[in-house]
Image (tube, rainbow, N blue to C red; front, side):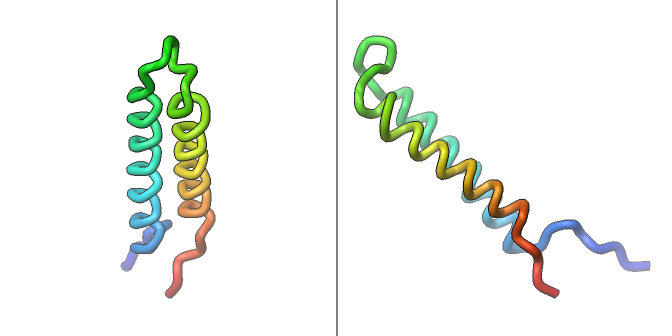
Length: 67
């Protein structure tokens, strides 16, 4: 009896890319030297990178694996 995995290889690759993007976004936010993180890195660039990581994760989950 053969069990089908819920996700394909491409899904898992996209999930790994999404997680790495999230980690990079949080690292970018932590690099901000302004008080309480109110500089460009903490308020603009970091959150944009984090949001793109979440979008990649959603796409990875919703992507239909090919047969």
